[in-house]
Image 1 (cartoon, rainbow, N blue to C red):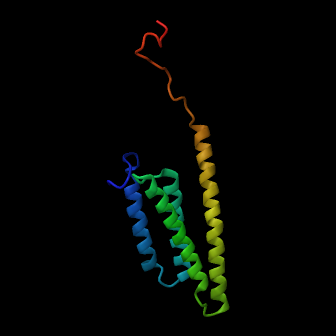
Image 2: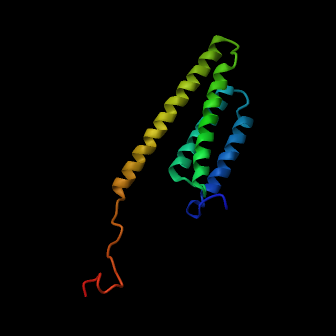
Image 3: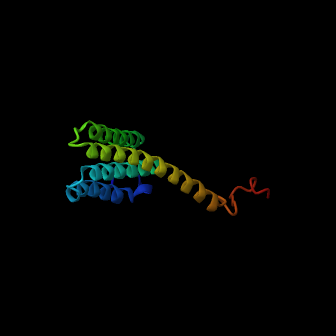
Length: 142
C-alpha cells in the first residue's frame, strides 16, 4: 500500500487483479497462442490506460516508468508474435488478424476513454464552492 498515493488506494486491488489475470491467461488458454497474445496485450493496454489516467504511484517517475514499461511490453509481445515461424498460411493470417485487431482495439479503447472522460466532465461539472466564507473581515467587506 505504500507504493501508491493515498488518494489511489484502490490501485493496489487493480494491480493485484491485473497480475492475476496475466498469469491465468497463459494457463487457461493453452491451445490458442493468438488468443493468449490478444488477451495479454489487452490486459496490459487497459492497465496502461488506467495508470496513465489515474497516476496511482506515489512518485511521478514511477508513473512514467510504469507507463513506458507497459508500452514496451505490448510492443515486444506484438513483435515476437510476428517473428514466430507459422506452421501454415492460416496460422500466419491468424497472427496478422490478431495484431490488427489489437491495434484497432487499442485505438477504440483510447477514443472511448476520451469520450467517457469528456462526457462525464460535461455532465457532472459543478461549482467548486456554493458559498465562500472567509474569516477576514476585510475580505468580507465588513
